[in-house]
Length: 264
Image (tube, rainbow, N blue to C red; front, side, top):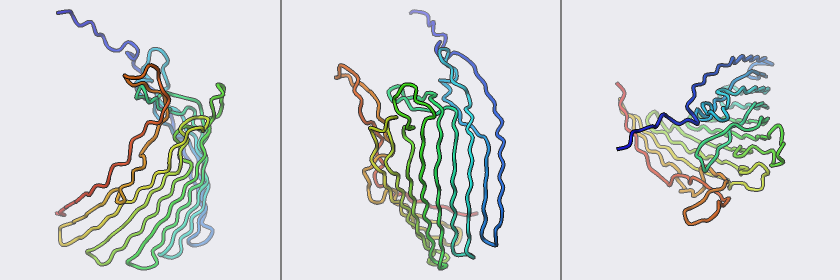
C-alpha cells in the first residue's frame, strides 16, 4: 500500500480573516399623523466564498463593502390601508459571480444597483386583507474593461407579489399568494435572458382549543417555470468541445403540506 501523501489542497491551504465596520444612519419626519418621510444610509458587506478567500493563487477579500442609500415615504390611513414608496441605491465594491461548471463563485467587478420599491396593504373589512408589492431594479457593473457587457448576471429587474387572505371567524382562515419574477439577464451583454417565473401558493388553516391545523398547496397551478437560470459553457462526456447553453433548476411540482401543531 502506498503511503498517503495528501497534505491538503495546496491551492486553498491558507488561513484568512477579515473585519469591517458597518455604520448606519436613519432619520424620519412626520409630516402629519399617518404620513412620514424617511431617509437612511450606511455601509454593510457581503462575504466571499471561503474557497476563494483561502486560495493561494488569487485570494479574494473575506468581506466586501456595500454602501447603500434610501429615501422614501409611507402613509397609513387609519387602520385599513398602508402604502409606502422608496427609492434606493447600492454601491458594491465587488460582485459575486457564479461559475456554473465549477459549482462555485468568484469575485468580479464593482457594481451599482438602484431601484424603486412600492407596497400597498389594505384591510377594508375585518374578514379580508390584501397586499401588493412591486419592485423595479437596475444593476450595472461600474466598468467594462474587457468589453463583455455591463449587466450584472442574474439580477431581477422586476418583481411582483400579490396576496389576499380572509379570517372567516376565530377558527378558520385562508390565504393565497402569487409571486412573479420578470426576465433576468443571464449574460453581461444581455444577449441571453431567462423566462419569467410565476408561482401561486394557497393556505387553509383551522384553530381549535390547543390545536392548529393547516394545509398548504405549494405551486398550486403546477408551474413549469424555472427557479433559477444560468448560461455558461459545459461539456458532456459525448461532446468534444464545451458548449454554451442554458442551465436551470425547475420549480418544484405541486406539493401538499399538512401541518399539525399543539400549544401547551
